[in-house]
Image 1 (cartoon, rainbow, N blue to C red):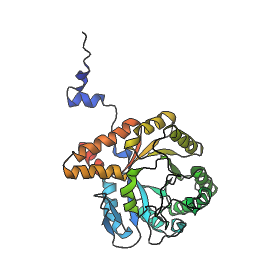
Image 2 (cartoon, one colour):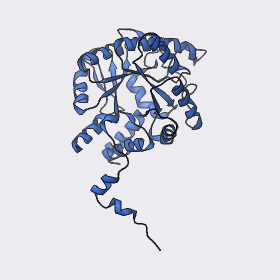
Image 3 (tube, helix red, strand yellow):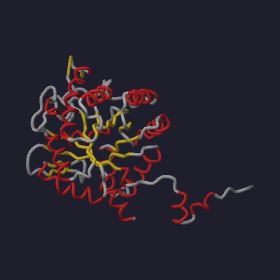
Image 4 (tube, helix red, strand yellow):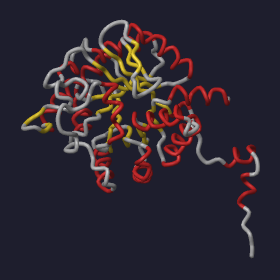
Length: 324
């Protein structure tokens, strides 16, 4: 019997490195930041060890570390003091996200600023838009999205990332930005966002849990694969610059499908539940958290994601810098 000796290319680290197909790089990473309205706030999120909510006066230490590590992009989430039925603080030109954008632009101009465009952190009911008859009204919410993205753009956002899964969002945003002379502001579509149980810790982090019901009427059914490509196609046609899949680990097949169907950059969101599970298992001593972290993120690259939004960004950057 003839033996095919594929192990020759695994004999030692030198040859393994030469034939390695995928690599994690610091340039792949986007780091989420939670900015809370108020002062003297540096509050660790219990379900996300190592991740904090910061008031603007406490951001400097975190931003210094991010930039020293070579991380080039941040995704901003705001936690306001005041909430209402519509989430009107999202388009307050002196709101917490708008203040955060201006602070970062003034003090860390090298950072690329992406802003979350949604309402769940800002509404009194925790849903992602305007409620009508117990559900989110798509088209009324689009009107408020227009106001939100213009406020972010005026503050200096480089890119907006609409996460609410409202139909027509990307096209609405592109039209209002272009008509208002913000043609350089890019859009990262949450093109394929599933109604996932993996978001639990984030809802603690951003005070964004819905006060009733769930988000299944606007986020995607986890059972569906082909529908995901329809959603992504519409974002592509509406001129999203980057197409994203969220969550990542349980949806690697979707990341690969998307990579195979588009020439645009593909992003994925390594979400809070994925982060928390690794941290918890590592704390118990059940896994080597660092190795599982790196393997998980590498699987996202292998599946086809060029960009990874991850709470592990600082830890990964430290490891990669030490290898240089």
